[in-house]
Image 1 (cartoon, rainbow, N blue to C red):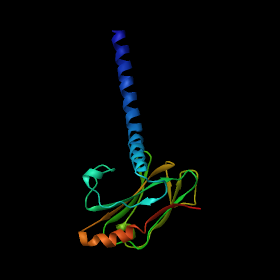
Image 2: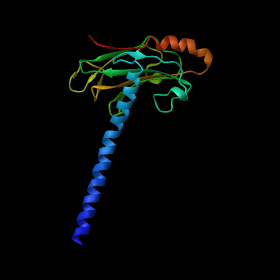
Image 3: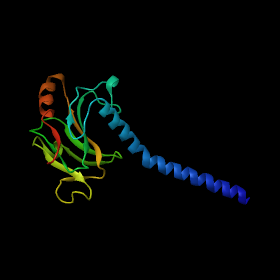
Image 4: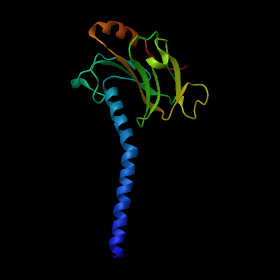
Length: 172
């Protein structure tokens, strides 16, 4: 009986350990894969990229919505904070979100919070930039995601103009 209990305890311990490892590691692995794919496509850190409307054939993000325009900035705050800035935002749904390396969403600014007012925020690393930034990233690297709702095709030119004014750059 003691041998059965010992083997059971070992199996349960391994199962729990594997489960915890998977839960802790999987988000980081997924973010690393997404970041690597974007870098393979020519993206660099701390620069906003504005691809055209997404289709299922060209998705980098799981299940992109065809009525949303996406802009992405892979960020790296190792050397210091970054700045996210916009001009006047369009009168439609929009959001700017920050995702840490483990996929945790650590900030969001959207049309409900800011309306059409310009956005100008700085993001630094927790502990490295204690009070000089608006938001603190839990990781040195991650992703900033801008989404804008395209209500109809006629709205596309104005939305493209607005989102191309969104910047992501290192603070010097």
